Length: 414
Ligand SMILES: Nc1ncnc2c1ncn2[C@@H]1O[C@H](COP(=O)(O)OP(=O)(O)O)[C@@H](O)[C@H]1O
Ligand SMILES: [Mg+2]
Image (cartoon, rainbow, N blue to C red; front, side):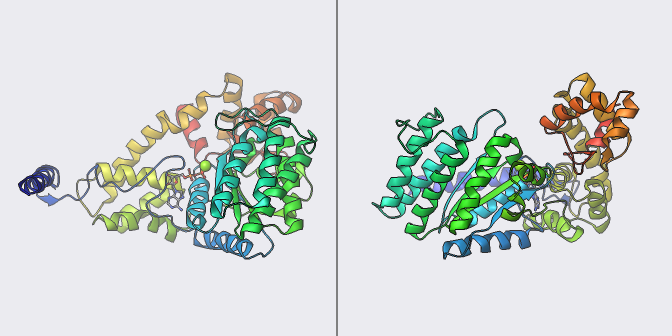
């Protein structure tokens, strides 16, 4: 009992020190400190307020509910530049539907094959289906196929024991993956649940792997099995999928995830501040919306810096101006710099020439001309930069940056 009281006093004491030392500055009540900073900049970092995505969120959740009750499945591929919030949206959807359904996700990796990446994921889905209701011949059959699949494609995964190649695996990826995923879909159907398979950064899959995946989803769609695919990736993905299989266009809905509208951007900053007892003046808010162009990642970065820099609430335009200097320095030495440094000198010249033409998509022929090289020489350079994920082709013969405001960074350091 006495110990409990002491603990309590300790806590009060700590609270008192923290409060006394940090929360009063220059006579103003300061509500901001590192401890209660609500903003969360970073790849895949869940935002304190997921603003402006209700429509797409509800649409996809509805599609999953429909699959759950046996309606035809619908697949989605979220498309957008870096930092617009595709990953956190995907994660939110999975989190919201996971209690009723079986969900698994993976982030595609450029130098591993699809079988290697998807085998453990499908395995976990089957184990989960098995747990949902014991002894089902659908799950058993799918597990058998999975072992054969793993053996046929020489999958070596730590947690997964490889089986022996049986008569069912043909060694043709599209065929075997289709059989396997259909079996998973049938197992889910027997269980009366939907399976949600999410793959982030889909653009990193090879053309063959992407084609096989699309073939499998096509069959699942024909069979109306409750397996939903949620993909996310850079905007060129729609084109890549279409090139891999012509019917991809009809198989997926491609919601465009972009910058937030002003009302949502404001909400993304204001709601978290308000829960901590802080607010922005109208001028301060207008300035943030202007400099961030309402891109979600930059909103978090600016929120974070304003919070750290401002002495008191409400936050003023002066606070934002100071925060902008620090935020840009921070991005220039980290977020932008690491990407830029991955380019060779020749590739850097290429993107410099693009940056000189502004943020909008530019004609690759113009870039080649400004570099003084024929298009045939510029094409492989461009292809390398695309492969590194720094630029993409929004339309034939055009290139654009995959990272918003990358052009401004390049101009600053040129
Ligand atoms: N709708 C949103 N509202 C507020 N912040 C967001 C929103 N979507 C994403 N963010 C923030 O943006 C950053 C990038 O999100 P992320 O999902 O990694 O983007 P992407 O996968 O498109 O590159 C994260 O810090 C995240 O918290
Ligand atoms: Mg992402």
